[in-house]
Length: 380
Ligand SMILES: [Zn+2]
Image (cartoon, rainbow, N blue to C red; front, side, top):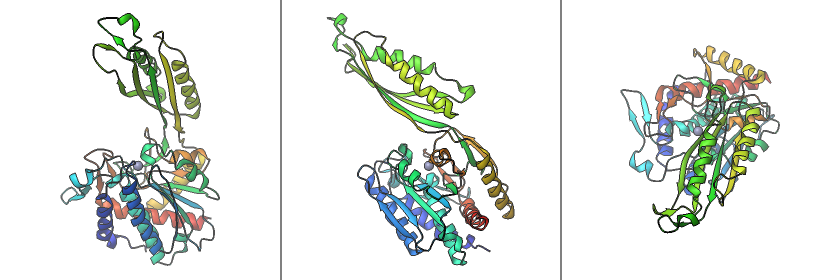
């Protein structure tokens, strides 16, 4: 019998420590601090921790056990959050006993998951279950900004892997994630020509006007019924209200449901930006659909079945769902590896002030994770 319940207060203590360190994606020192704490914990369990240095963002960690016989399971979790520096001291970790919830920046996305992985493996080790050695853990530092520098690392570390377990939080109702939309970001930089709008407006070429045309055309690409969403979510531009704007920038978020839609949308966005509507302006388009969609194929359905069976043995009815948000599950799934996401504890309101963890789920989902690792190890 795996005993994790008695570890709850110890787990919450570690979680508090992690939450109270600012580790936004651009805060390298903070993310590295998280990495150091977590690395020390894994080392204490006998794991080797490889630090992949990075100048741009926090270092990534690849964790293996030196006595692994066959490493079949890849576990992926991220150490960065979306919160800016100062958030941890402004609203530190706190527990609402009545609600049974813990709050704080990154508490559910995904610091609770880091604690969960650690304690699942610790529990297996404590009961001399060899399964704990046969996992590889990748902890990356830039998931919240698209895993730009860790994607290739994750892909590389899938070598010899039969299953990928992604530690994004479970949904509010406890569902795991077996399907995700693909996503990407684009930046449209328009150059125009400045001129005084009162004295000689005819000499100006408005970058804002040009961008406006592009915004309308891009939004026309939306097809929510089929899972395509295109959103120019942020714009910048102009210098003064009486000046024809010489520059304007649009930031675009794109979501797609299928790989076909991904290439179709890439093509259409390039097409929209290939020509200008305002004569004399120019457009520079950068970006792509960086996360492919994750579809619930047969392999994923089969792995989910195993997870469901394990859940039943523990008295937990596990459901699955799809979501529009992207995660690193897209990378492993796109490589044909059976992937299940949402294996972290249960919580909600990620990326907001009300982000929370359901405390009871911390040990529950850790037990589930331990059992899944054990089952996949035996099945092999
Ligand atoms: Zn996350």
